[in-house]
Length: 203
Image (cartoon, rainbow, N blue to C red; front, side, top):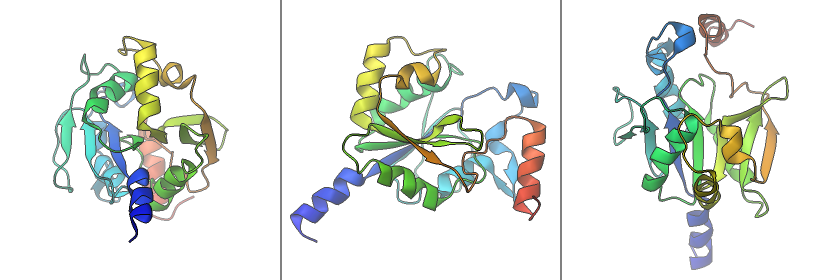
């Protein structure tokens, strides 16, 4: 590989940041990332979609995972929300791009991860996120430039309890349709039942 080619590969490298510190309140407080679809914990399904991540940083209580070498971090305060999760992870990020994911995306796949990252090949974009079937943004199924997130976080101030839309408000974002349902998340027992049905061939 030429030096120029190696530089391009380095620029496209990414770290995966998984927000896994939520309380699962709509599920009665169960450990949502540990719930299974297709016999695998949701967290493992998400991590498996990022096989070439330089680092996998999970923000939340430590749990067993299939992937070795996961780094565990905690928000300040614990359970402080997704912006607090970003703030906890950013000091440990070394790659130029961040894949920012919820821990409850049973249908996230490697092809979707690559679509998100490829969208950042446009130098005028700070991030790329999926939009669901209703057109709603899914900022925890997204890729961002590390430098842009750091700048936005500094400008935002205290992160605890802040919604992601406040952090992302000034970023130039690409919005990608999601035909594979990769942004489908399991917030309720009905969502989990639907995911399990889809996994077994239901519609």
